[in-house]
Image 1 (cartoon, helix red, strand yellow):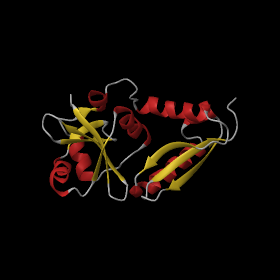
Image 2: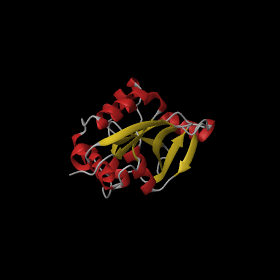
Image 3: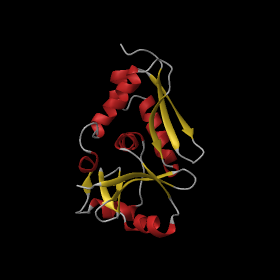
Image 4: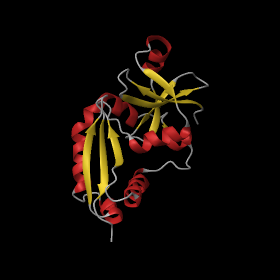
Amino acid sequence: MLRGTLMEITKPTGEFVWLAMLDEATQRFWVYDFETGAFHMNKWLTLDYEIDRDLEYVGIDRAQAVEIVTTRDRKINKRIRAEHQTDQRAVPLADVLGTEGVPNARSLTKMKAEGIANSRTGTWVTWKIYSPNQEQTARVAASDIRTGKIKTITKLAGPVETRTIKHDGGEIEVQVRRIAHAS
């Protein structure tokens, strides 16, 4: 189990890079990979933190970390993904944040769909925030939600509209709103 300081790592432009933990025992960074659902040691980030400081490091609490896990996404390059998929030292998310309130993919979708269902008709709700290099993925997600391919939303919230918003840092936010009450 890792113990240390949770951090949100961003570029100077504000673009999200990593959810990370600085391990208090080793003073090394572990980064959360949204695809593996685990934290992985990242030597480069440790060097940047100690020497270069090309990135920005903001300490966050557990609730903010859970919010990042539930609302953001970050695709990583193939080399890092391959390393993470075979990483024998990976630390599961629950071992860092605990299990209380930390959803798995299925419960996360249901939780978000319930949030949409419980929102006022016409009120935009954030579905997910994507990295700038994931604009196509964000558009596909918005389309899948709007056309009913994500059945949990259709079942719980009824008919919806979606939109994508591009933020100043380049991140793309997918928003959803109910257009009629679920029956």
